[in-house]
Length: 371
Image 1 (spheres, rainbow, N blue to C red):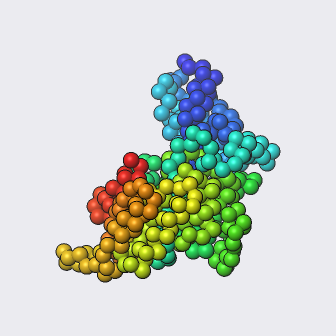
Image 2 (cartoon, rainbow, N blue to C red):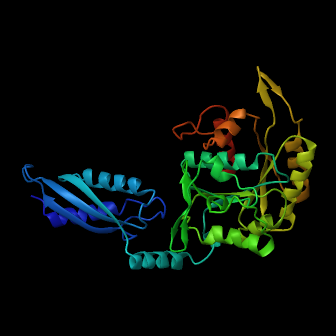
Image 3 (cartoon, one colour):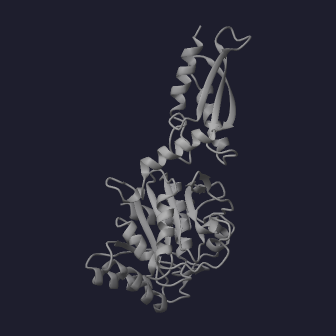
């Protein structure tokens, strides 16, 4: 007969591999396992036990509580040396315990976590010279692609005036506030933060200069991101305050310039790339959006041709290194229709990356960026 204390110790050890999806830490490290009680179960010939796990969530009504409890159930039920029946009792941390946890997490981070030596997060700032070229749509679908490929992916909607990511990801909730530290909202596998998630965000925002820069600093420092593999920033169009703020806060960021084929867009797109002459940011490449429309086997160039290639060539010459044209994305009504319904078009209804058409195109783009 197995000793109940051995079972309790073994289960605690197994729970050290259950990760809180928001904080990216094990539930044992976070102090979420208050107690484990194992008692022999009747009618099981001495090898069956009822195991009660007392779980303390960081906040009452935690949106991911079901995910956490399912993982705990699985860790208990799959114990190999006895037949265990899990019972999960869920409560919330006391105010003092939560204060201590948040203080520890803040002390560990203290500042912008993406600007420290040794950080391995790849950061891509998605920029355009003008609005209306599909920059946010590209950002959303690229983020969803990275997540579907298995990368721990985060995205910041840095377009304070024209935030779009909440709608494109179908997000209608606010970030969880842990005593002043925010948990990003996760949708379609991507951790998201946007000014559009907060109350009053539908009102006109007229921030400039220092206050605008502070909004980015808060998104970087006051949100618990964990250690994502990829961070995408959806920048406001143009070369204004936010682009400079990103370059200052994230000098390791790589700029991806979005344009459409016509000269009126591509000429302005070059200017967004030339910001790299003023700040320590590398331009990784150019993406031409709405390149053509497929109609009965024929490619119709509704917005003209060559804009992406013109931007690539001009930036390569001006910056003194290769700035390739990385992708030419077709004009596909489904991208708009599916996106406005709250699901990135690269994903199927189950959240898997599509293997045809736009899914394959974005997969190729993501693989180029990570190369």
